Image (cartoon, rainbow, N blue to C red; front, side, top):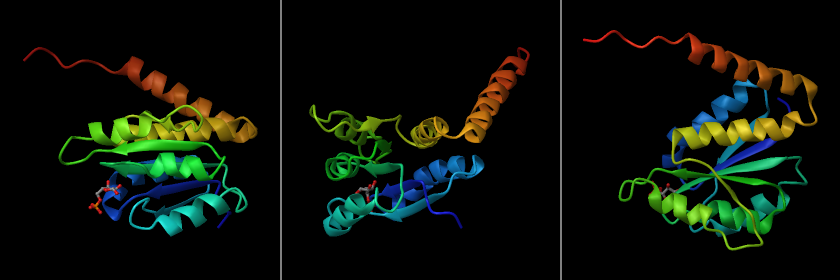
Length: 164
Ligand code: RP5
């Protein structure tokens, strides 16, 4: 298997049902990825080693998903200079608003991209990573354009149901 270009990390195994959508999207584009649980507060030592070694291992960006007090994306961005794409995972108590605000409100100086709460955010983070990688990969750019053209045609061809 090719060395991963995109690292997917998440604070808990409970985030995987959301974050697997990022993995599936990358897989569909044929982009090599890896996924691991890396918790900012439960395994800070692992977070430090993962983030500090990421560029040297060949990763081009990191998609980081977390819920609640979701400091994983921001802390990852603090340690690595790779682009970090944050996915707010939907929490039980606050439906992911806590995750969203934790990730999006980074103070100036350490940018952390922030996507929508939940599945849409996981998919879009992967599509964003795809667009970044496509800048230096003509074959990937062709695939991304085909994906968008197909989506465009599907929406235009959709018919609304008749009145009931
Ligand atoms: C965060 O706490 C994780 O990202 C997860 O979204 C949330 C809950 O984790 P678990 O209690 O389900 O392990 O660290």
